Length: 423
Image 1 (cartoon, one colour):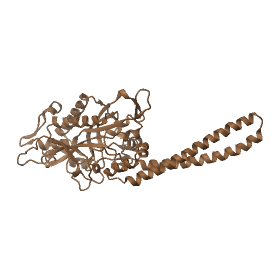
Image 2 (tube, rainbow, N blue to C red):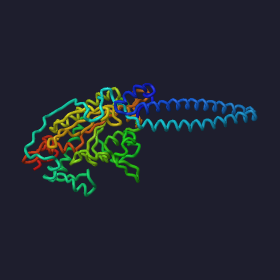
Image 3 (cartoon, rainbow, N blue to C red):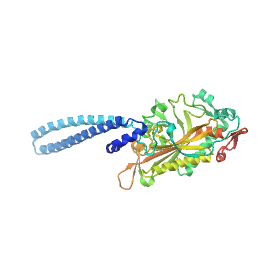
Image 4 (cartoon, helix red, strand yellow):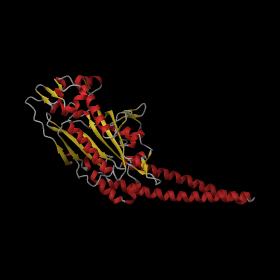
């Protein structure tokens, strides 16, 4: 959530930057500023009345002590009138605050100045590429055919048990999943991330804190009886560990990682490529999260995207790094890099990771702050990244490493799988 102080001091700049996300800044920001002005006037009136009421109360007490009851009664009548005015002003103030809050939560984060203009993924900027596109043998097939041939993933059984987008991993397919999770967690630990295993359901406060609610409510699975939400990413519970927390400056950066299943309704994905593992409702992911000093957050963003790139290099997957344009960024992000791997049998790029800096947008909702010495607490910056999401990694590994004799397992995964080939 944007800070009111930012809107007060830089209203025109806020509107200009929101235009890069194709958001109607003039409509929302001008109205927020107008309400803020009225709210502050009302607050000043309220404080004036309170001060006057306190002065009268003191005067009444002194008159009563002096035995001047009649004079005290006259002043009491004035005091009652002031109390009525105070109550009305408090109601007006509360209405202004509610109206302002309801508008603020609809305003996305401001994109960083380096974010390119654009509305669609086609306008994202490619900032890095690595690896050669594999040349497959004649008769090579996409991962869903490989999954059936080697009995690795059963999509039809998933439909029977739950529905489309909930695959069942079997045999070496299940072991490959577990191997990737452990490999990603071990690498995160080596990079200094503390592992946590959070709940996979969260309450509304947690969903609000990281910006999923109310913006992405339609994309989340809602357990209505208990009013809980299945997490779309481990970012939500891990970042919310620090909700309403004041850290010490010397504790920064805080580095956490966690493996969870993730759940997304994928509402509105009709017509997109949903074949095989390309788009699921339930999938596994290892997430990395950092809480950083504002002066260091963009340095840490670069560190995190290079870390994810290192994982892809170890797996031997060709990939590219994209700097997302304003129209393709998430609601809460100030700057995002996407990593895409090349899926050789499908002949397309598949997104496997997003690494984002949210600056103070999430921490303002979370009331996540840090203190330097005896100074007043200030908002921290939050960052996260997929390191990595499994489905499209598995798709690319199966497709890119297929041979007529079977599927070769990357050397780095063999200590985790216990086998070097699927045949």
